[in-house]
Image (cartoon, rainbow, N blue to C red):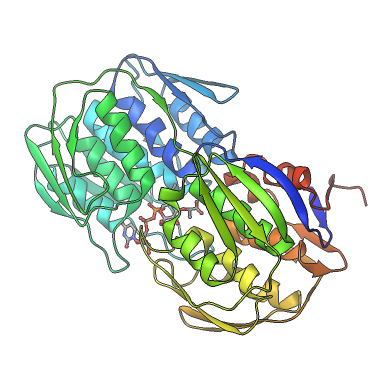
Length: 423
Ligand code: EPZ
């Protein structure tokens, strides 16, 4: 597999553009199964997870083609009901086809997503929500085997031990859109990606209210039209670019970033002495002053997003002072700590908390990204480290970032890709 050679970079100057949101497009691709009509989705990021979801749809018998950032999905009278372990093990988000398959086909077999490096990935809230709508769901040989001749609206609470569930909210919202009667989802996830899914479903003819709040009301309808929808910009990619600019110093315009999706992040960066100006459809960051230590706790939206916990840790590793970083969504999401410490960081993990003692300089080292956001964090750390960092595991980056490396290089970052087998 290729690797990236990263040198200390900055100050940088320039602009970059945010792609469509991976975590919005994946459930929206599943939502297109709810209608027999063709759907066209725009601003689709060309990331590995989207290609995996394309493969899942095709194996269901659904036509799906991505040309540039424009995705066409033609379900027609598809007959498939299986999402195989081979594909689900590549991407746990595949579970979001469960609700649409139940609503359209009356049955589904979806492999249970195993655990992964960021922690266990339970599906109890997905099962609870769909069973409340009348589905019978059993676990057989590692698969969720579900059936529901007809879904019936219900009142459901989707709060888990770690807050709401983004994809469980999506699964229930999609299934409820074609159920008989009204569904009330309490403790629903409020993430912008859930709101984007609701907007797409409404555009298809669904009747949904309260999306973006903890109580969502869905009134089932007989059928849905195909979607014509444009995905929101990726707030996690935007946040990653902002943190990269903060680490390198300089002035960067992040085009397409939505300040209303990044409130907690902008607030925390301001506290860390990084000024971000909100413009119409963009964010301008000016960085150069010393980074101040700040305490961060990840929470469901609108709290600080867990997906930016690792990149933020890379920034706090070189801040002045000691930061306390608490992970309330995925308490085990700390695989990047050991690798950052190999780069000279001084981070001690205590359960779901990391104590990050800022050091003046990181030192480049050979490191391995264990998951999507850990790989991003190590790439960013390399931009602020003396000597060269050799980053492996960059296949994880491509799961969720369409062109992070190119965006950073265009800003002036010193990153070189080395093809596998060459030095
Ligand atoms: C979505 O995953 C995102 N993925 C994740 O992004 C993100 O970290 C997560 O939401 C939280 O914001 C996609 O949207 C494709 P959850 P999801 O269900 O929906 C627990 C990335 O890096 N839980 O909101 O699977 C769970 O263990 C990825 O882009 C249950 O207990 O996450 C976690 O502690 C990583 N039971 C918490 O809820 C369930 O049935 C939030 O998980 C489901 C979840």
